Length: 329
Image (cartoon, rainbow, N blue to C red; front, side, top):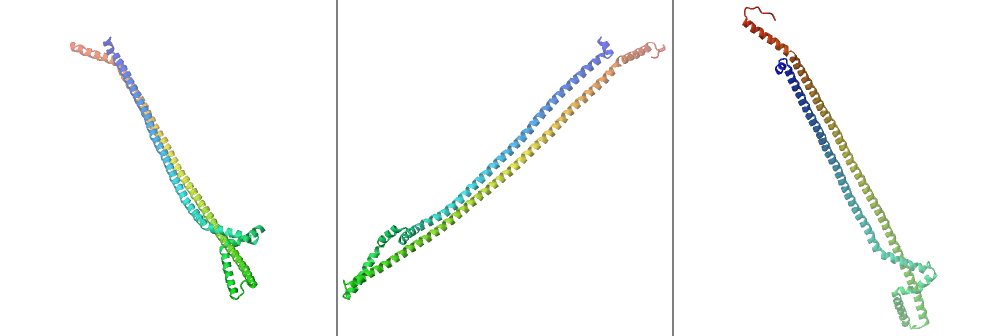
C-alpha cells in the first residue's frame, strides 16, 4: 500500500500538505509574535512620548511657578523698600515740624498769655476781668515799686534842699510824679503786652505755615508712595502676565508637538502593522501557489512512473530478444 501510494504520488501529496500546514502555522505564529511585539512597542513608544512631554510640561509649569514666585518676591521687596524710604521721608518732615513747634511753643504760649492780659486791660473780656487786671497789674512788675520809691526819694531830696520838705507842694509834686510814672508804666506795660502778643501771633502764624508746608509735604510723600506702589503693582502684573503668556505658549507648543509626534508615531506603526499584514498575506499566497504547483506536479507522478516503467520493460525485452520487432509505444 505504501509503495503503491508512493508510486502514484499520494505519499508525496500528504507530505506536501503536512509541510504546507506546518509552514502556514509557523507563518501565523511568526505573524502573531511580530504583531504582538509591534503593538507592545507601539504602546511603550506612546508611553515614552507621553512621559517625555509630561515631564516637559511639568518643567514648564515649574518654571512658570518659580518665575512668578521670584517676581512676587522681588516686587514685594521693592514695595517694602519704597515704604521704608517714604516712611523715613515722612518721619524727617514730621520731625522737623515737631522740633520747630517745640522751639516756638513757649513764645507762642507767652504771646497767648500776653494777648489775654492785653484784652483784659482793654475790657474785651468784660469789666470784671478789666478790674482784676488793673488791681493786680502793678504786682506783675516787681521793679515798678523800686523805681517809684527811688524817684520819690530823688524828688524829696530836691524839695528838702529847697527847704520844702514835708510841704504841700512836695506832696502835690510827689502825687503828680507818681501818677505820671504810673501812667507811663501802664502804657509801657500795655505796649510790652501788645508786643509780646504780636510776637506770639507772628510765631503762631509762622508755625501754621510750617504746619501747612508739613501737611503738603506729607501729602506729596503719601501721593508719591501711592504712585510708586501703583507702578510696582502694574510692573508686577505685566511681568507675571508675560511669564504666564510665555508659559502658556510653551505648554501649547508642547501639546502640539506631542500630538504631532503621537500622530506620526501612530501612522508609522500603522504602516508597519499594515506591511506586516500585507507581507503575511503575500507569503501565504506564495505558499499556496507553491503548494498548488507542487500538487499539480504530483498528479502526473503515477503516469510518469508507468511510462518510465513501460520504457524500462521495452528496453529489457529488446535486450532479451534483439531480433524481434518492437512495438511502438
